[in-house]
Image 1 (cartoon, rainbow, N blue to C red):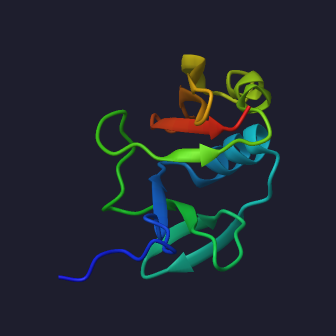
Image 2 (cartoon, rainbow, N blue to C red; image 1 turned 135 degrees about the vertical axis):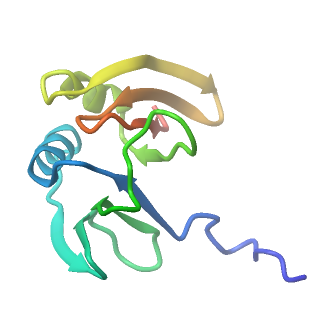
Length: 128
């Protein structure tokens, strides 16, 4: 059995299920202050998060196989330099903060959870 190299990211790709492409795009672009890039692939409507190799990437995805939910796997989006900046935009953008900024510990920074405009529970992480 081959194991992950110490120089390899555990995460290669992520997908967040969405029901409404325009609403989800507006929500995530607003809270993260980014531009998402639309793409249709294999019958899926996708909004790609900006990323550059060798960093992991991901997308918001609308398809029959993608159903928004608050249960199951949780991804943590990078909210550096301080996730509070992102949390402060969540409710005005149509989401709900369900766990405010909390210190993990001095070495691992902070985390928080929100429910997005589509009904997904999503985590945030920042060093501060």
